[in-house]
Length: 291
Image 1 (cartoon, rainbow, N blue to C red):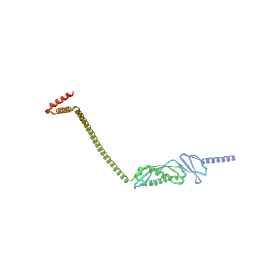
Image 2 (image 1 turned 180 degrees about the vertical axis):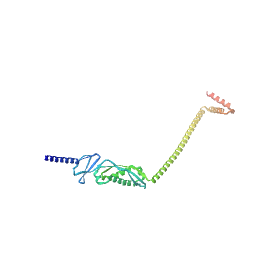
Image 3 (image 1 turned 135 degrees about the vertical axis):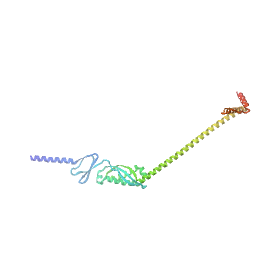
Image 4 (image 1 turned 45 degrees about the horizontal axis):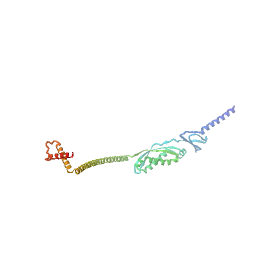
């Protein structure tokens, strides 16, 4: 009976040992993590997400590293541009750990290291640019900062995913000077616009006068052409009919002139020429002769 109890105890201890080995030797790593395994204080391996096996009692999980993307707190950095303007730049960096063994054994405080590196890069890059270039080419500045930072943190097993410049602030004196310059530029543009409007109005008025003069000249030319044509017709008629046709035209003109004088307003007495009867007679005879 004692042997049976002793044998059962041994098997119980063996089973307990096997269960403990399985518990210590099997590691299930979440999808968002990586585990750094050490053996006797030295790097043994890096466990990827999923089920992994390690040697119990020899290997241990020394570090559990999240590989999710991280964001550093917004960092304010003072810098001086190439044209000696003091600016305060607000930056934010996004990164993730790709090689945990480098991050664990090569850098102590990765967030502080990245912040310090970004501050130095921002100060160096802005020092080579004018203020206008900094404000108008923010995308180019962001690309330069990201590339320079990526070269530095590569030894730490870190991938920089995104760098953002949230704001570029100026000191009060520079801001006031820029505001005055902006107001002066707006006033200048207003004066230029007003002057251009007046010049355009003068040009339009001149174009209108020129157009009116051209139209009047055209009307005079048409009238002159009509009178020349009428004169030509009369001359041709005189050439064909002789002197009688000319006398007939003169008589008609006298009759028309007298009719206009008689039709004028306020005319109570009309003075007729002495040869009016002869003119009517001549016109009548010529008209009768034509018929």
